Image 1: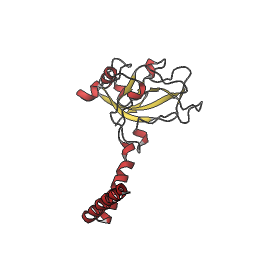
Image 2: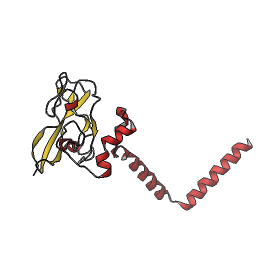
Image 3: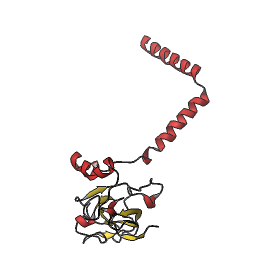
Image 4: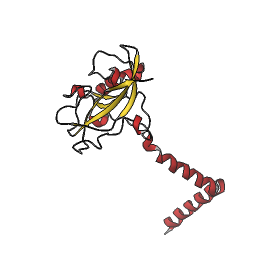
Amino acid sequence: MKENKRFDSTIEKLARTTANYTGRRSFIGKVGMLLAGSALLPLLPVDRRARLGLGEAQAASVNSMTRERGWVPQDKDPQSCDYWRHCSIDGQICDCNGGSLTSCPPGSSLSPSSWVASCFNPGDGQTYLIAYRDCCGKQTATRCGCFNTHGELPVYRPEFNNDIVWCFGAENDDMTYHCTISPVVGKAS
């Protein structure tokens, strides 16, 4: 019984001290800011490499060009993450998984929706609009995973966000992501 009284008296002293130094409105304002801040937490960027089981060395090599010297595109190897068309790809390159830069591998279907990015081609010095489209209906590919974020915008601008699985509306209505193609739509102006 004494322990309960001691606990109650300690809590009462703490509450009274807090009440002496803070007003009700100030407290409610701080709680409101905390709630609003925690609601924005899902908008923070997420590193999806761990979900695909990449080791630390492989994950470091995937994005080494973005950490050390910024995006440095090349135009020789389309199966490499630093190929110029992959400036904003987030997933598996279809070219490594039985498809090409512009077509899905057999057994998968092309999503009707896409996200877009402007990518610089060092070969001709031009910038092109790329419409990334997901290939859906097969288990996620495991080769050539790239997680580039050049030009990516937050989720509230979905047409410029590469974290969304774009398989809704695919022919077979299967939301399973397989890989991503990166066709050129035209020159960016």
